[in-house]
Amino acid sequence: MSGKGSGLRNIVLISQVAIAVMVPIFLCVAIGVWLDNRFGTWLTVPLLILGILAGGRNAYVLVTNVVRQEEEKRKKALEEDIMRKVANANNAGDQKKDL
Image 1: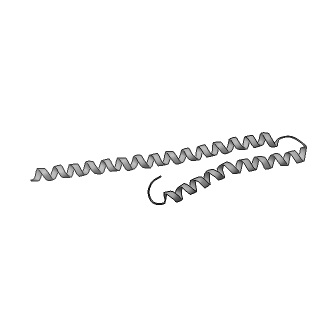
Image 2 (image 1 turned 45 degrees about the horizontal axis):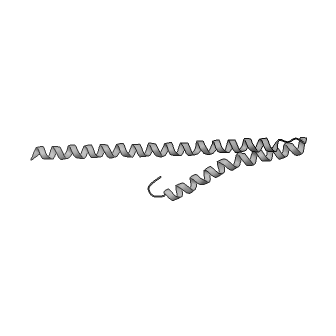
């Protein structure tokens, strides 16, 4: 993540990852506590583990998508740079022929 605003972009990404991890954990714990109080079961711990796994998966998918997008941007910029250099080299060759 380079360029202007990359610091802000990184803060937003960190916030998104934190939310993507914490929401499933809190929801699973809340459901587990409610079920335990309602039916007298012991479902909070298994649901907590499920929430942790779901949050980890969410974070993985989010970060993987961001990395893929950045890689595509980098490749596109590299291709444009190569095309610009080729065009400049062709123009320089044409100018030498004219002399």
